[in-house]
Length: 266
Length: 352
Ligand SMILES: Nc1ncnc2c1ncn2[C@@H]1O[C@H](COP(=O)(O)OP(=O)(O)OP(=O)(O)O)[C@@H](O)[C@H]1O
Ligand SMILES: [Mg+2]
Image 1 (cartoon, protein in one colour):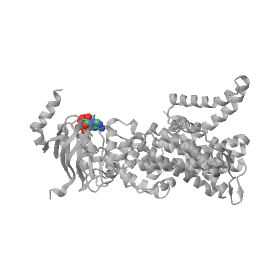
Image 2: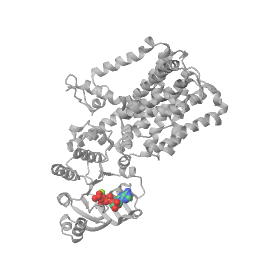
Image 3: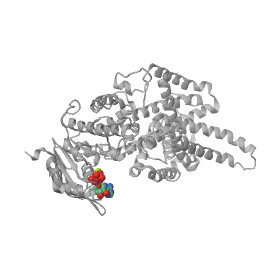
Image 4: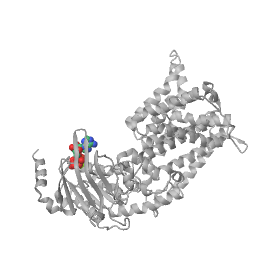
């Protein structure tokens, strides 16, 4: 019963870069109906975990299973096609595209359109463009992005760009959504908005686009944000899991407090 | 930023995507076509020939744009691929007696295939690192023509390219050839524009702007970089064949390594990353070249005693200076100016 609910599981993951041990034996299970927060001080390995799941980093040891299938050696683009979408800690939008095209690009794997029909434009290509555009409009409506529809993302304010990135990930209709510090660098109001979007995604308040809500892995530094939205928290330090539990348990966990305080001593 | 003419709102998504969105757009487009197809009536002789060369260059330039401007695969082998297409069509028409109109698509496909072969080694390189393997494509082309297939290509002696004939109608004058080139240029330009505004084009730009994100978001970057390479060289091959059968005789000296540099340099001048950029690039290159050809001998006369050096070096110098000036003052190229102009027109009459 418990097992079936696990959609993604990391088993004993080791990842190193030369002498730097980024991950040292990490075990995490992510259930398909939860928001799991990954916390930890700088350099503790949070982004490395997301990159390993995406297939962008290759752990030297350990297994990653998505819906029971081992994905360690699968190409990043295939892993995406299996239902893993994400945002990046440092914005990774396509600067040369408008908001709508950035989000449309998230539907790449779902678009059945050959480049030959693209040359013609009218006919099958236009049909799929319009069909997927409808989904993209729902997402832009949900994230309140309509005013920026045709603007190149390069000119948008930081907070809006973060939202476009979330939109692009949502457009993939993911089963697992990885969010790497979606609130970093935002002001209070933007943070609250982002937190609301994340909760709404979980609670399927946008059924027009997606039938099933994705599991969400949220990387976040700030405990107060995490407390507000996560159901479960995994704390990392030096590439190791040091604690796991509900936000309340984590808040009072000695190891976690020490890891964070230790950081402040620098 | 993309704006619409004042007061025009899109009711359907397809309308929002259309190139020609208003009646004015349609009127302008039709006017442009009328202008294009009456050019041969008022342009004669040398200038008409220039028009034809601009067209064939433009087709090849569309291909360079797909590779350089859309996927940031900096190719320094474009003239080689143009030549490759020219030779495919020359060989098919010369030795097998094929009709040009069957040989033409083969020229495109042949160059695309050659591109795929070269591409399998270059797609693993990024940006500037592609320069070396693509240059080698140029030299391999020389080697193939002048050594390996010398028996059929006649090496440096060159090969005859038959005048295109369609249902008994021979394109044997500049007047006729202009229409052939104009029609194909418009069709291939529109096709390129269509490609870049649909799924494939978005994938190209995604790879160009952030290949890591693109891959993690589900775009198979090797596949799409190869595809861009094949499509870009398809255009090069078509442009090359169309040019070869206009000049009716080719050898490898017609495809100098310097042209390969000019394709990229003038793309910067025209504007990277848009089809209009390729249009401006081709026009600017050939018109400037024509200007140099006109001015250089005059200068040579005035400054007698330089032993003809002006004639041979002025093109190179002018092109280099122009490219540098653009890099400094308008790195987004003429196409950017064109966009700004269109925007000011869109807001008219409220252009504050
Ligand atoms: N590509 C890489 N090359 C070399 N070292 C890396 C690489 N990626 C991560 N590391 C190292 O691995 C460790 C973990 O980094 P990671 O980015 O996963 O931390 P993080 O928890 O996301 O930190 P932050 O809160 O700063 O984002 C760090 O010591 C980092 O320097
Ligand atoms: Mg990080």
